[in-house]
Length: 220
Image (cartoon, rainbow, N blue to C red; front, side, top):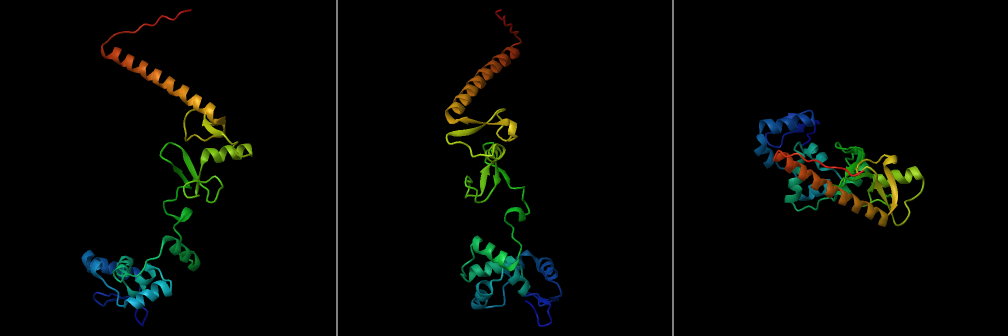
């Protein structure tokens, strides 16, 4: 709670502090986690509703005003059955009021906007790109690079093939556009060759385990 003198007052013991971070540390240290969880705001439901929706204050701003933790504010909002803001509304308010926005490159875990789709392909963040997927925010990196290098969109009925088989290697020299049918033939041929090599490896392992030697006579 903020006093008339401008200090922050502990809602549990009444002790005053000059800085908001000081009271946060005091509550956590002096009163323990159990008491922090039971801390309450000294305001009515109507007052909290006004702070949250009328004044458009964040939970953190309200917490600093009353000298409690943000989790306490959120819990009391829930206890009072006050509707909580959606992420879209919260982000909009954050942008309007100058509060920090943790989306995109502002997020502390931002990695340059590159992610993997779990199948080996890399996607890059390009919101509103005409070929973006994943809620219109990401596009396949290999597609973006190929179209950028060739200065044209990928022809209809074509796909990008990785020459070395590494789906995350999106160097221009490793990317080639192929008709979908031809690409399927290449993949089928690769799959067949892989199965043949796997069979030979198993045969060699079996021979080595039994200490046998394998000789192959090549015909000229």
